[in-house]
Amino acid sequence: MKAIPVTARVYIGCALVGAAGCALPALRPGAPVPWSAVALLGVLYAVCEVPARCRILGRLLGGTSPMGAGSFFPVLLASALLLPPSAAALTALPGALLARVDERPAGVRRIWRTSQLLITVWAAALVAETLGRDEALGKGPHAPDFPYALLPAAASALTFCLVLTALDGGIRIAAERIPPRTAWRGLLGRALAPHAVHGLAGLMMAVLWRSAYGPVAALFVLLPMYISCWVFAQYHRERAAHQATIRALVQAVDIKDRYTRGHSERVGRASVLIAHELGMAEERLEILRFAGILHDVGKLGVPTRVLRKDGPLTPEERRIIELHPEYGHEMVRGIGFLGEARAAILHHHERMDGSGYPYGLSGSQIPEFARVVAVADAFDAMTSTRSYSRARPVATAVAELERCAGTHFDPRMVRALVRALDRHGWQTDVTADEPGAPPPPPRTPAPRAPATPAAGPRADPRATGPRTPEPRTPAPRAPAAAVGKGPASGDTRAAEGGLPARVPATAAPAGVRAPRADAGPPTAAEARGPSARPRGVSAPKAHVPPGGRA
Image 1: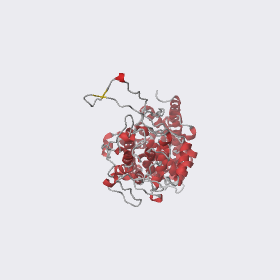
Image 2: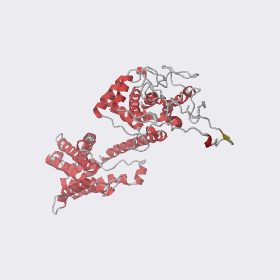
Image 3: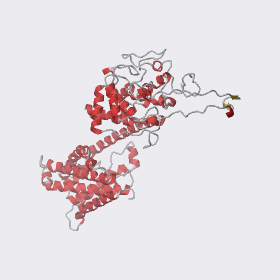
Image 4: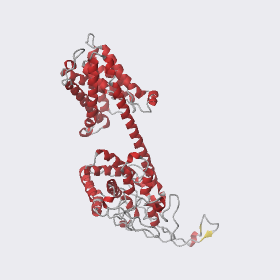
């Protein structure tokens, strides 16, 4: 209880008192309670919750239990249509106590869940009783009164959904300190359709229970519900595996390039904001988010020294880093659920005027997802601190995107991002090694003191004898405007965020043929080119002046 806020403890205590008040009338001496039906429905709901706690049954079912707390709400809704309110509340007691709890403190959470279900079932049964459920359902030879029987069933299911949602929102306010205006956002919309289906199944159970065939016939309703719950659990298991795979890939990229930590998640978030403004279908939003998160996964194939270099890249290093979209596409080629995200990973550095890479596509030739991710990537690259540039204000980044719209970025995507930022704002996170750490200061070479005769000769650890030091002069550094500071930048890493660099992407180095816009995917040898080297192979050493850098 120590980890639970005081307000949450008070809230749970009030819910426990309310649940006791709902169930105690059934325990009074002489109360008209059909104990056989209460016991049968209570045991049935408890049995439905057992596989979620039993590891052996879970393994027999393929590692996924088809049930958990609330999976068999049809049993509770059937009890709300068959029993008095206080007796119906008791049917939820055994199953709620046996339900699996994955988070701690388990005891408190189980008490809360039990109290919540008892209150919810009591309220649903009270509404159904008020609307004349007994006359509508019929009994024995009397057939149920359809379609009037749908009224108490629908009202009971709606009350069940509303009370459960209201209690869930309250505990979020008390325990998680969520603002009241957002505590219930989305809860009712997600719960309404499933509870409507459970309400129909509960109505079928209640009708068969009251029929001449008796309670045994009502049990057959649970079989299709069991299968549907198992399929749903399998879907969630597969989706969780997908999420785990993506998290592992993103974490690997973040570990390798520590200055862009959190960049992938922010690009995914910005991509979804753009998609919402464009009115994309809901089923495409998740795939687009995956595309934004995984757009830089190909950096796993780029040498770490290139990713973490502070200053401008050499042409050789630029050729190496420009291979990362193709590396990424090869890595995710076999992941079927990514769909359109694979094209976005391959083409998110293409430009509208055809000067991008790897294939120099232009205009509508660039996939839609790639155009969205390109804008999101460039925006976050400008608004976050990198090893070669400082973060810039959101307004400055937006102005830069608008200036490059039509040549480098799709104007429609840029306008959608601007509208999304005006509506939702943007939370810029620090992308340093530790969360909340200040951005690293710009790295400047420390002044070197000239060697003096008194210092004596400097020993070279790789040589057997002394050598005379040469006079050192500081290497000229690129001005601030040339180090990742915008579309006119001379830093080739500006192209990582979708920003143009001073050297056009289509300007191929000597001996390397530039890809055509209409060309198909190159072979591995063509993609690498004679000067681009695979991971682990160093570039040819250039002459470096004493004290300077290549």
